[in-house]
Length: 282
Image (cartoon, rainbow, N blue to C red; front, side):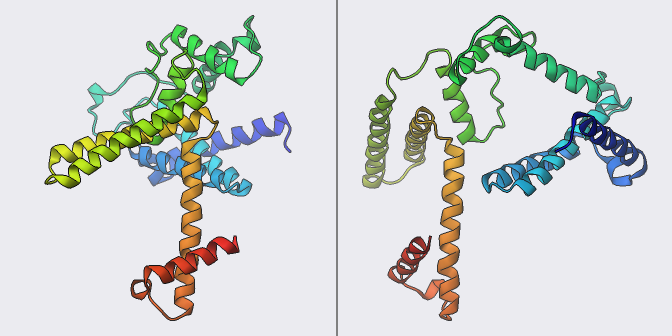
């Protein structure tokens, strides 16, 4: 592994290359904060996918792509020009920052949020640290003014639900015993089933759909709460199941092709038999 001097040299090399690209490459020169935004989201999901696969080579590669975006945004932040698409020059933000500002602000925040490391506070385990963080964030200059204030609107709904529940739990709004959550899960499922039966007995209306939508959302929210209490990341669990389902269905499709048959021409029982073969082969 590299020593600290080699790590700093590599980061300095990246900054030099970014300077060159911004000056000499027509594509890099054309980019703005807005034009890179979707690419950044895509790169973040590619990193998440590599992590799910436990592929260290891909994780390293995708981390590089994410780091490139951090350096790219910092480079644009240092330039004395408008780097926002569709924003008139007179309306563009005038503040400037560079990679040193990004790093120093991050370092200051990390030190402030870890008084158990850099101050007099004590934390014996990760749970203590989580409770401490919520208290510290509310005191932070320019930070969250409410417990739920720091949750981005753009978070995927599954992740957002987990973060909401985690944050309120850190200030004491939680089940006294984790087992109690299952009564809530069953209650929400029963309410959804009742609404579903009502909709089946009546002509389906927009109002009925809305009620089923709300009740199903409550079921998901309760299940995510259960996952949190049992130390399961619901997004990771669902992605694991997605990968497993795709692997098994690909097996079914491959075996059908070997038999010279199309899936559309097979019965459900025949596909189920191949599905069970896929399960056994694992």
